[in-house]
Image 1 (spheres, rainbow, N blue to C red):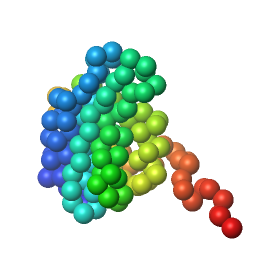
Image 2 (tube, one colour):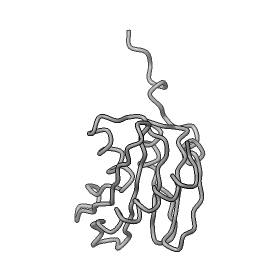
Image 3 (spheres, one colour):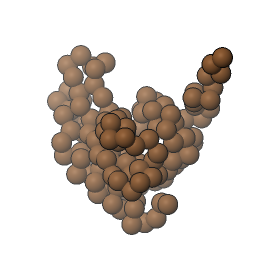
Image 4 (tube, rainbow, N blue to C red):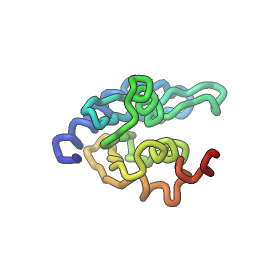
Length: 135
């Protein structure tokens, strides 16, 4: 359940994760922290590549780390940038895969934040149940 203590902890952990960002091309460091239903927190930072299409966002790093750790149920995620930028479309789709109604805390380095649900950020997402049934 999302409460002020959890919001604070996730934003704090995302700020810390942001410090490890590898962003030599965009200079746009991003940190993310996601809490699983089991109460564990996984963090991620963006990692850029000179071949831009191979770069990966902080949100997806955190989610993939959690999945690699055996977790696929999520309670909330925080994303921190200099200016409170919103997650990209690819990250929104990955979030929707696992938790279409999960709260997304979007914060900046000045302490401002807003909370939106994944399904507010990605209207009419393509979800697993949209695939035809296998017969």
